[in-house]
Image 1: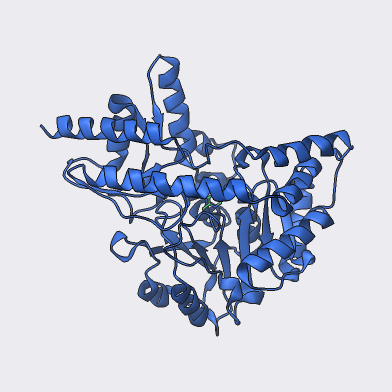
Image 2: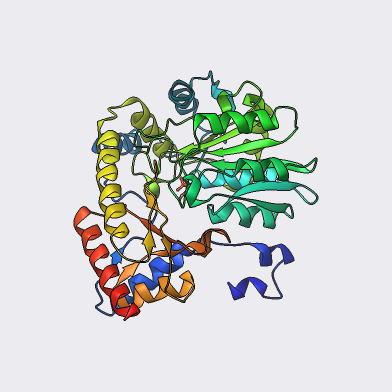
Length: 396
Ligand SMILES: Cc1ncc(COP(=O)(O)O)c(C=O)c1O
């Protein structure tokens, strides 16, 4: 990070944050290079292979010559497929020209914040939350305003705090359900309350729904775009990375009112021109093809969640909620007399388990660790055993 203060760089670069997951992964790989055995619970990507029908569609698309530039906003056939499926899942009508397809869903964050926010604007965002939100808010010179999520309310956004923090300068509210790093979900009632709070305001909502299909049935997934007052002020962020185990393909999309779709497509023209054409063709197969592999993946994630939550709760000093979605747990750790940055570093170095410190996601979660259960049940058992042994010996 120090390099971002190099005198040659523009001042805004010193405000750019990062995702520590990549740094921890690099450190874990370094240890593996030295012959150490590491259980990886730091990475936020499904460990499953991309379903073969999707891979075959991409291979066919290359053979058929879909290897050239396409429209900046995405191929019309994919935008139509997204409009139909995403609209059906959320109970709203979506037109293809309200969709912008991007290389991964992350650019929607960057593009939406860049298109809407600048100095003088306040942006409300979840704390703990995905670190790139605050990074980009800072980068564009807007003011980040964190809103807390706490374990005792199932990691739902604190709606009283949200009400207090909405101001005439609020330009954007970012919500994320199911949530990274906690796995928490906003209930349909929460979503409705948020929509009511903003109904007479001018603020937009960036609704990060990337984990929207990784849910376990305890809380109903709802989108704020279905709130009657919010459809024209909501940008839905979604994509293929998590639902179809396609992180490396880089395929995501945003759904937004037309005036924003035009702006985001033009940002895309300036940055990447377009998303890879054969990857988009594979995306059509993902949406229109059999959905069995995604359902099987979610079923397996649920078993792993239960295994990990039960195992962690058996370890003295660890309290772990059972989240309703995504593939993360965010247990609170007590009694180790150290901050979770040091705890995460020692778990990696001494116990061979790679996890992330809660502080990587904001101030509120700094007493927690984030563990991803995108790993086999066997490895999760191993990780629980290693953490328990390490914690018992660290205590004695
Ligand atoms: C909350 C959240 N939003 C968006 C993304 C970005 O997804 P993609 O890999 O499609 O860019 C991630 C990835 O980890 C995420 O956790």
